[in-house]
Image 1: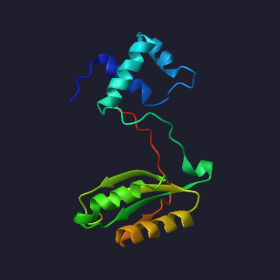
Image 2: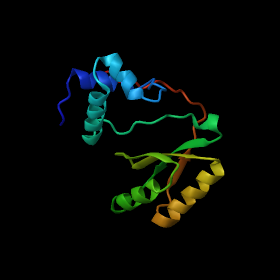
Image 3: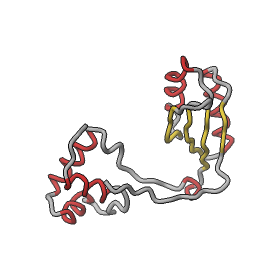
Length: 151
């Protein structure tokens, strides 16, 4: 595992939320932390290359952009898990895909322009994989919290 120092921790804490909307956002954060923009960028690259940072990007509320989202669960035979995950991951609306220790052992989220589109995609996934037991579990109410982890 990568050793991270106090500056790395400060960077991770700062960029999790409220990322600066600025032509040079890393310079803004670097100044706040008392380091150079170059050092900031080098550290972020190193943290990403070492798997500490998975991605940097915006999070959007699908419904406010005219999309729907759902949580899906599938009962996938162990010999088909890799195939199933690979096929599910090809769909651009899939944002997360996890294997779980449960009879429904693969869970994923799906975003699309309509629930009809999601249903059609799930039918296509079932046809391509032979996995028929796929649940579509749309939320009835969203309780969103801010996920900010103190590193």
